[in-house]
Image 1 (cartoon, one colour):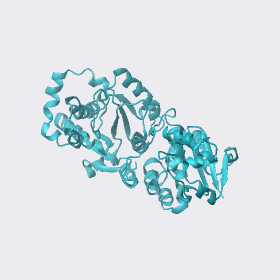
Image 2 (tube, one colour):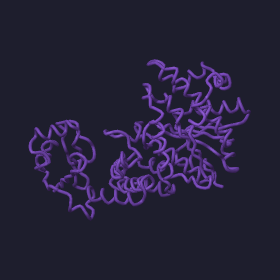
Image 3 (cartoon, one colour):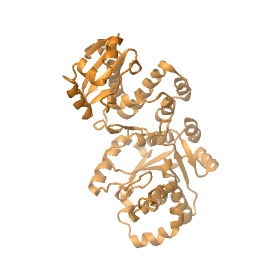
Image 4 (cartoon, helix red, strand yellow):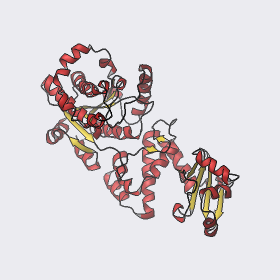
Length: 408
């Protein structure tokens, strides 16, 4: 059985580990049951969750048993990690509905047949807990002083941390203990913002059961500048095609910064590392070929190969002069004309996407104009030669009206 630890390390997933050498040995000896928790605070998983699903798939492919734990109980409280304000309170009905929508998305990457993976919901044990008994049996093992040193709490103390949220770490730690008792789960995985919660769970198992448990966090999906990936001007990049269309999803990865291409290929695809290294080494215009591979592979994993091919074909037609590009309305202009009509408002009138500059400004103000898939927010935004790729630039009005400008 391949040691998946080395695979995850090579691809850049691993950020922190509780006991590196013992965990590597454990993963090399046989099947390990592990879990990742997902609080259903929205009706779809997003790109940040997708990275965690990829880790689960790597682990399962190496023979280990994943538990996808739906946080039907913890979502009633809300994780303060990485949040400056308290999360919106959801009803039990909203949480249950969200949890149901997660199940289909997990199945895209995780095989739940023949007990190869487990899906459970912490509502099954958290919602009916006797509070006094819980405090006596579980709360006694937690030091408030130590809890307050955790990053997830320190960041909230200045603005105000509610007692409701203060319980979150104890609840997540109890999840780990419960999964250890039910399924023999000895490893919890999660994003690096979960480190304090994971440590608390491993420590609780040691105190209550006298057994060794492990934790491992992986890198958060950020750009080379440290900005969290998976968000656009219009919001998060969702895995639900009704919230983020396969084409929009494809285009997001097609347009990532050059510096982020190799990282995304490592973390979000199953391409062999020799191919990743080859694609990641491309420079200049050639890096666009690597971006196309990235966009196709990620879209295929989330939406299936058919939708990935459709998104690729649409993108090539709209931006790459593909077979269907003749159907896209186009305007050919010279550099001289561009210099005289360099502002986006000028180009909207020139292409007849707006009847006047006043109407063009109204469309921009309403957030309905995009240049090369980036929202225009400044009336005075200018277009230069650098905005053209292979002599082409795409303006989008609303969600469906495209117009290509070809620089002669």
